[in-house]
Image (cartoon, rainbow, N blue to C red; front, top):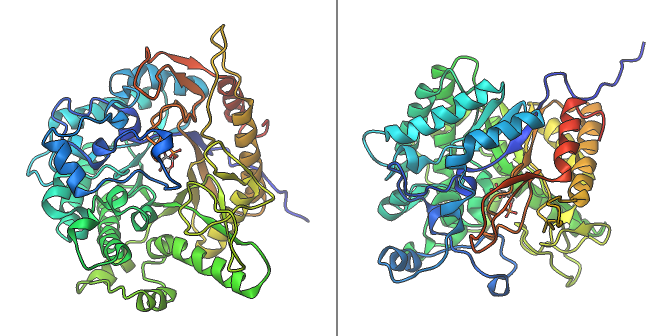
Length: 488
Ligand code: BGP
């Protein structure tokens, strides 16, 4: 008898994902300290390059703190979720969310990062949020660190480059696990942990100009080793403090294709994929993969480990693998070709078969199926897509409606491929669309790069009423959830 091929599980976790620094605002209220995200300015389009993230250096930070620079910092204001969370969660409930991904802003809990005692007002805020979710039967999925290193740790220790930060992170993790043990079951240790090799400041609160004589990669791989240890220790703590808890790692997946079938292209794509999957390899298998020995040697990278580190990694692998997926990459060794914008893979070039978003991200739903199958075969662990979506300019019609069919097209094609992957045998736990409510863009600090089913009336300069309204995609996603992905 042949086995029936089924779609999504009945308890599939449908929902949406946000990060504190992109939604909350209230950056200096109720005892919150500054975080690295609070120092990222808005840079007008004409002044930007192909860079993925707007970066800052130590001189810039010193000048801001000394009051010499008066830039705009959209992530300090977010969409004021801090004061709108009840209204926003009610809208997520109306969408039918089973899960909602948030991050805890570390500097709300430990304002300087290394404080001896947590800030009660910060703890209370998230307790209120989690209780509100519970009221609506929505599971929280909580990221401990989403590009929000307390600035104090950057200024005093140079962020994750310092091993001491592991202890501050585990203190923070233990504090929130203990406080929310009856409210939160699903945790992620670091958002897009691989981004640290592209932007050590964003991913690790590290200022590389403070470490002369070392390459960015030499610094980043040391810093990420500390994050791996911290992640494993947090996994251990979660399992001890919260019975039945599940902890995942989180990768910005960069599915990379060879442009031609020249063996050099195949090898290059394989190597770039390995460099990306290194982060999930360590988290899932509990050890450094052997291919990194060669990469480290070729690039003069020495990762200082302490005795006992290998055991910590080995003993506490993650329970599931989560990742963001927006686009795929293509690479070639065969001559010059046009580069694509906004990517994390050095030298990635245009794929002639794919269309691009207004920000140059190449849209590739089938790449998601490839990614899911690869992960499944490589790790055999449950998978969770915790970010996916289309950043687009939306037009508000005179009657207030917003016809975002382009967003529906993007999402439905990706969910279709998820369904195929599930039929291929992939164990998929859930899907949280990025930015279910419009929020501040991570890479550009723009408000006008919108992902939401819910529109927020605010422009790039911070003008607007902050009023929330439903786009066409709202009813569409509501029905997707209602039919468990059957109707797209
Ligand atoms: C991921 C980040 C998110 C996010 C998303 C979309 O890399 O984890 O924080 O915002 O990308 O990116 P952007 O906001 O730059 O369009």
